[in-house]
Image (cartoon, rainbow over all chains, first blue to last red; front, side, top):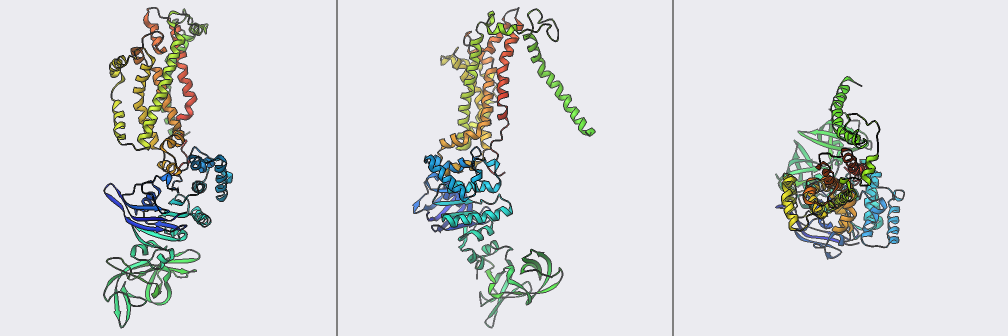
Length: 352
Length: 280
């Protein structure tokens, strides 16, 4: 187990800079998720940590040791790939024991550790099978087993669940989290799926265009996004965001947008400032509030109902618990929760 | 069967049957002659009245002027073919691995050069090759033919193996590197096993190329004891009164090993070993 730290890490591919000086400290035993849209540099960052890409500038340390010029095999890391990357000509047992074999461990030691990992991952019945004889979820578990047997300082996951179907993804998500709670190995996990990030991470680094937009615990990011990008990236259904202007009068402030008044808790910003007003779907209550809206689409999901409503010329998503009897075309009133509203500067996108 | 499918099927048969006949006719002739006695060989019958295996006995016992070195010559053929197959594989596999997996600088140039050599017919190089082998003092030595054939077979072999290497998932190399494999271990423990079908196919290609080679063998080797059987067979035609039935019996024997090799390795010509490595 070990702490990992990035110091002003930069990466260029040819003349294109894809990682712009990232600094990030990952604590010993922490589950860190790097999340962001494709091309944001999260995989590149992980691959630099793995030693699969050169580091253009900056330093990366694992357990206090600078690893910039250390070969992958000497970094004491294990990686799980999106495509699993199992050796097709080896059985599950051989796949899992391969790194130990290369390390010249004794046969009985290899045997013991493979058996241990197989037990943890419920792979015991499949040890003599070849990867082509396994299902997607089983292959994924073998890839994890290959990582576990080495007892590395750091686990790296590169979108490990992207190739699984939705149901299996949820199951494997829980398995990986459980595994981490059990082994307590420092883990860096890359994904583009914010739900995975939210559910698994101790802390999340939201990345965009080679920079970290915000670093924090999942709910911190959800409740207080630093900027528009994080606000819109985290959360499903996504936050409603629309243009408006701050109005201040008699020590009260609100936002004028979509032809109506949107409440703010306390006074923020200055009178007349152009802003983006953001409010999550579950913070728009149906009821006797001040915003008139027209129902457009009703999407029942069982435990909750998602409504698409029209306010002025904007379309907003509303999430209500339980079921809704509302019908399309119906006129309703929305009651935005003032203390849950987010305002961002229209120009910079920064939180106000 | 619908009329349209029937028509399509019929068209295929119309092509297949003539092609099959065209291919089988010489083989039929070879078998026919080899089973006929000297007198009946040119009788014009579609099948000999009294088929005989005597010709094969004559060949195996080397009981004819042209056959005095039969066993030595078939041994030469085998020796040369196997040596060419093995050497070509070594050269081409190392090249393909270095270019495709280790991403060696200048790899593209090597590939382009390999492609370029296709444009030069082997016959153009025969005389220069003869001069070169002479300079090395290798004329009339089996190694001269082996080296010449490896030279001719390698570009194609490198090209094919490079293409096959490129199809191996790159993540396997990365996984192996993280697992602690050195490039040599990667080559031995991951690359070679996965390339096996292509290696067998290319090895067979080079082996058969050398087995069937006539021009270079004729040029570089001249002693009765060093020539392969392909050249030995041609000696039959040196006189006006060629023993055709013995020639054909020998030729049939000469044709059997390639057929056997194809049959033995047909499984490898298909591939499919990498399935299950990565999700596709």
